[in-house]
Amino acid sequence: MGSKKIVVLYGGESSEREVSLESGKNIYIAMLELGYETSLIDYPNDFTPAILQDHNYVFIALHGQDGESGALQDYLLKCGIEYSGSDSAACLKTWNKARCKEALKANDIATPRWASIPELSEDYANLSLLQQEMFTPSYPLFLKPEEDGSSIDVFKILHQQDMLDAIKNCTNKTRPFILEESIDHRELTVPILNGECLPSVEIITSESFYNYEAKYLRDDTQLIRTNLSPDEQKRLDALCIKTFNALGCKGWARIDLLQDLGGNFYILEVNTVPGMTSHSLFPSSAKIAGLDYKSLVREIIEGA
Image (cartoon, rainbow, N blue to C red; front, side, top):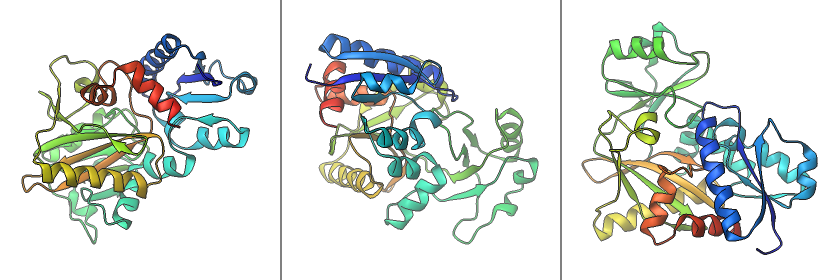
């Protein structure tokens, strides 16, 4: 189809490797069925620069550091190769949660308040050590790595013992984290495809929050179209487009957010390489909009 010779890069070395393998395989199969000339390469294990000589487009299906930090996008730009999604500058802003929140704040976009900590230690179970000018942390909170995805090493903290347990059970303590205020009501996501919002989706889970198990392992997690008033939907879509543009995103991205009891929306994070597994939010929203999986893949490629 067309003149594009596409290589799908998937896998990677991050904690999201298994998710990336499924996303990449699904995308590759869809491309074959659509008639694209395409290859599937496990990155970086089977990748060599020579591969790019035989292709003129890269579909980035790498979740985590390998595909979302901006380094790969910068490399492909220098090689003169077109690729899916946002450029390195946007990825640099969105991949790091603290940096993303700072950018949101600079653009007057509401996001839950947070405090940054350089690494995990039991000292930080004493929240008084984290008091900052704009935010005094108090329970409940969410503990999140500044750089990771798929809710890996994310913990809901209701009291001090939860914090101690999180520090004990965390897979990687020696990296920066944020402690983020908890806003309870509704967890939503809005995929954006080629500058337009797809249907917003509400996430309903039996877990304490939308964690790794709820995302990829449980079959009772519900992804349903949000039931919003026309005014709320208009505000939500406008906020997500503003966020997408303010952070410099391109092509496709997914905006994760919360709505409080007063109807206010708060941006949690922006995903520049959304999941494309059978459980993923982006294809679920596209399906509501009438786009099947193959049509979604085609729109991502041709809209780039």
